[in-house]
Image (cartoon, rainbow, N blue to C red; front, side):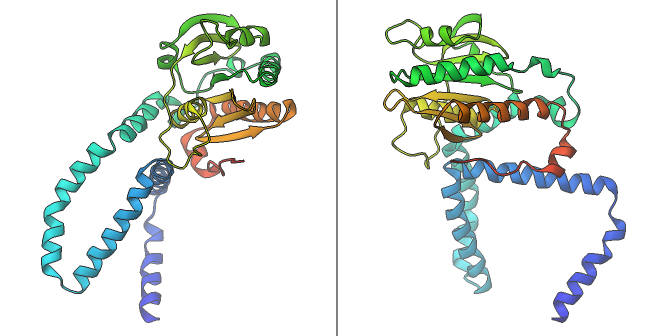
Length: 290
């Protein structure tokens, strides 16, 4: 009990020496640790992390019990193990760096000058809803990626340039079976269909249901490496879903889809004017998963 009291007394003695910059530093470190942990839980690294924790626990036990030979062996293989981990998880590290590279640094640390007029109009949302559920009835597969704050020019370059105003009829025609543009994803920026037949990165999340096909894995994949919103229409069931932040949300009707799109896209506009400190204080909230 005396030890706990002493530790609390020593800890409290540091508070008068904490300055405003120290608080900012603590918040930044907490945010970085949170982002790393969130990334780990969505990849194969989560399974590996649990295995590493067991090894660390075993190493600590060996140290306390003075198992010198085991500690010598662990020390020799540590360097090799780190190099092996970098090679094994190269795809995950590449995705993480791509996601970091797509972020606008000025948006993270300061206020962005972009206007909310760059966002999506109510008419465009209605056209998307109409197109999704019109294609749902005959089970026409569709993959519609909506760009938000993070630029998806690298996705745009993989497709065929369209540059047409968003309309339900145009989207239905693009995804019609046996048409030249029906394979791949459509990229939407604001109120414009930028390109079609785009290639998307497939998710490697091992926790995704095996019932989901390539189209759904692509939707989740692009949502893992960007802040985009993706509408998916299943070719097998006709079910409409929305992918965001690595999660797949099923919607049953137009009202549910409108609610999801309105909330998510409005959040995207608000995020343009949120500084890093505000984001840290407010928190990201819980990921919505249905």
